[in-house]
Image 1: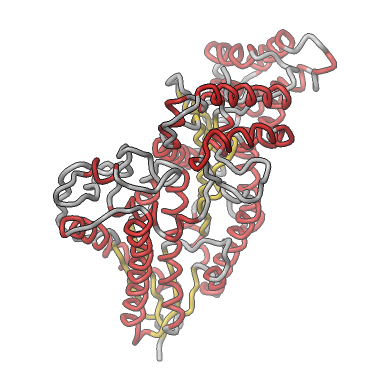
Image 2 (image 1 turned 90 degrees about the vertical axis):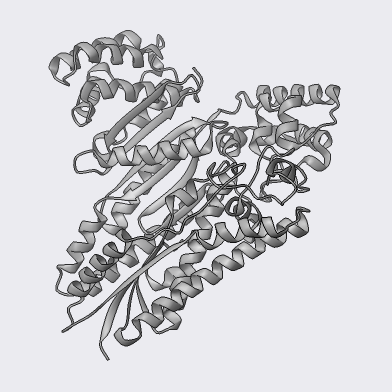
Length: 566
């Protein structure tokens, strides 16, 4: 019986993940995709298929997410049967996830349903997923030819998509902004969601957040029981590490102030189990506590006591939480070409399996390296994660280096830095745009950072990893320790307008500026001006924007050293 190559995939992916207003939405959306892919992969294996990508063991590893594209070697005669079994398994898993959310809405959230509600739910849940597959027979043992035929057939099938008409009337949902929010015949969406009984962190109170079927599934399904960390918690992570010994009294005050409105986001930290937004002084206002926690009856004197105790924590820790955090998007470079290279080897199937195993090893490493709650998704060569401001670049550099060490290939990273209250979907969009910009760097293996300042200013910088080396991290340290004046960054940026080429004249100007803006205490200065000027000139020569981009990198180093404070 001849064998065949089956390629199975489904969509939407990025748009499904991007419909998010909080980090928990990102996590649950990603994990729904993982569970659907896992169900399809297991069905292929049960039917006698042999998974090539991802590596078969990835289906069983909890810290390795399954990508939405599956490649398997299967019996040719049963190709259709196996693909249809995978499709049914995917749909069943989606229905099970959706039903778990539906049960939560009715039993725990106190919501009702009628024929109107049922029509919206059915329309939105049954038409969401587009499932594609293609198979090609392996003739004369030619794995490479069969894989290419199956890929071409799959591409042709995806280009011939047929969309069912969808009429989304009425008030739209809060996550996508384009689908009709769930409601009943005689109750509009705002009133319907105002009646919900579940409290934070699932839903903003008083009908200010309205969900369609997809958003309700993300917020109410069984996967939503996982406690994802908020952007505020991620931003406050560095502060928490220093302030934890001093939080006992403030912790008790918050518990008394919020009462039943207080909710925990982590079980591994008895000193501070609450959301990180309560570590920011600006959260402790009547309006913010009502909006975020539904706390309408407030003791203003008790609120002032809480503010005073938090300020005391700042004094004891000698720091305060920084308001910025980062989203990282990592993607392997030239993966299509790498698969093509596998297909050109003497044993293309073995080479393809070897690459899949390497990607599985990398995914397992990421699951161990990134802190729990910070990792949103890792599958194959894709990583989506959150990070505190100070850790974003070092983490990205570490992951890219590890990707190269395990797979032999390179990876590029897009990073978006934003205020913890900035819209999450816009930050994610900026991170994906930054990743695309990193991919535009010649030969890739690069990083692009986009900073979304609250002032409205956007800073974007790019660099190949090898050109950056350890230079950026060392610059951040020099600014943090005040070995260099904060004015240096802007002085270099201004000089770059007149000296756009990283030549000897630019290096001479760098020496002058470094001497002028080094700290007045020589003991805090590490390295002489000449060495640093040569280092910075070499880095500038490897940047897409040469001297101008170097100036922007120094501004970013200063920004990170100050924790996002201007």
